[in-house]
Image 1 (cartoon, rainbow over the protein chains, first blue to last red):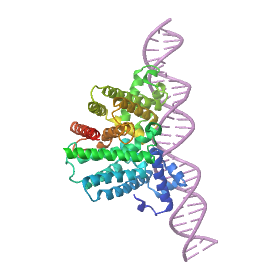
Image 2 (cartoon, each protein chain N blue to C red):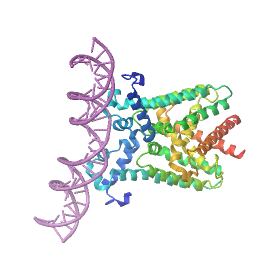
Image 3 (spheres, rainbow over the protein chains, first blue to last red):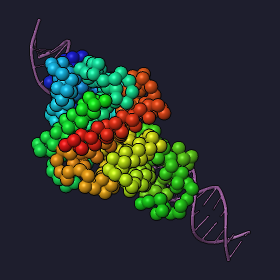
Length: 207
Length: 207
DNA sequence: GGCGCTCTTGACCGAGCGGTCAAAGTCCTA
DNA sequence: TAGGACTTTGACCGCTCGGTCAAGAGCGCC
């Protein structure tokens, strides 16, 4: 079920999709009911099931939208010219750019993974796609197995970035000293991540 | 509301608490209903509200149990004698020991944080306690502010560990090459985390 | 005007939810 | 043996949920 499979590429159907995506971003899956989606789109609940086979199908499509957008951004960075360090920093920047442009992404993925959400399989497939893409981008630069292998570093770096967006708001401005998701806060985190990448790269060199 | 505030430290009340904790571990908050808890404890639903003022209070107590156990483990490590590197490694080990001994911990915390769960405030308070504890353990070893400050490193290191437990099962044995939560998989991750810590420490030294 | 098609509505369904409560069961004590 | 306190049950309440469906509304076309 994708947007193209709709009865018609109807404005109402797309408004429902937009509404679902907005609700997802604001309150996660638990804020997303058929009634809420309809209300947000300015129509009655019945229409949700006229245009979409089920609420799950609608949510799955909303999630897929996020994933495709992210994959596209990463794809560009992974095919950057240059040496390994440059490519790694480019991919980190691409990841952070995407996360900053849609703050909800991190929370949505983590909610599914940690809460064993109804769409875990979709998320898992997407994550495997991302890892495959990153693997292509960093081919041969790291040991094939063991604690310094690419899967470990991928998990590590994505954790560094994803968790900032989910945890920093919990700590809040008072504790963090500045708005974690404000311009300065985001720039500081970006600097931190790049610093850690460099620390790891030079330790790998020194091996 | 803690276990000590119950009408009596009754066996049934505690069985309900155990049941809630088990369900939380297996399926997260969405698997946790008053009926499910009662069934798991082998009693009828009415008893849940006889011994606990509400389902939320019961869940809050189950969460608190996890947190207190974790704080105790970390407390010991944070007061370890020795230089900074030794203390950092000790704290990483303590964190991993705890996570390994209760795999559900990571998922439960992340579910609350990412899903804006009903118990977010409880979790947030707990997280601040943990950071305060770690701060005491590493006092003065890092800049007070900026991208190399302790809050950033704390977020980074806990992300490294927590996310392994929530994400690795999603990738699964087939993709990861071995059972991520098996003995060998856990040991490998532990080695990776310690390696990253050392990489960061020597980069800090070289500054 | 009236047919036919798409779009929209609102009433309705069964299920599960957290929570309440009167009644019954159980067990100790006087 | 009777009473009373504690424990347990099951019926019940109001509510929200995803999903269905018959009945219209609007509209273009013959």
